[in-house]
Length: 197
Image: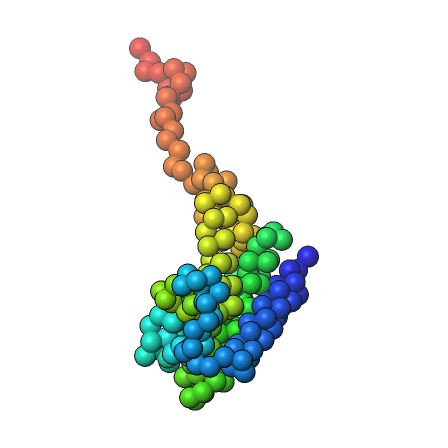
């Protein structure tokens, strides 16, 4: 049974929520104007991030775009081996977050591949993020927890482990190939002529 359709559906749901919240922020908020939700600890503030997740690494837009592409491809590659329902959800959520921010990198201003990610969730002034960031970081933390708890995440690769290779098998001809040492023949007492008196 393949889990790929479920992973893509989960990813699509995350992308829709992420892009919808970004579009709402663009239409409803004034850039850099802060609106408190839980005091200073959590607020809504529209910012445009040229760096990494949570507005980190400003000034490296092209590098972040390449990293986002690599992460997206990596998630797709490993998601094929998702072994449990929880793993399917986690890969789908992480993939949706990666695609959500990648869309911004590729298609938003100022230019293709150098687009600024729309962020709007301000965490106590430490950093500003979005739904995609929450999906990526949350999925990564959950995967780490499952790994520490020895929960199955990835199915073994086909051919990994299992039967021993041909080189490790004993050679049935080994015994016949070894040299055999034979004792020299001992002449019989009756063999040959006896001297006559």
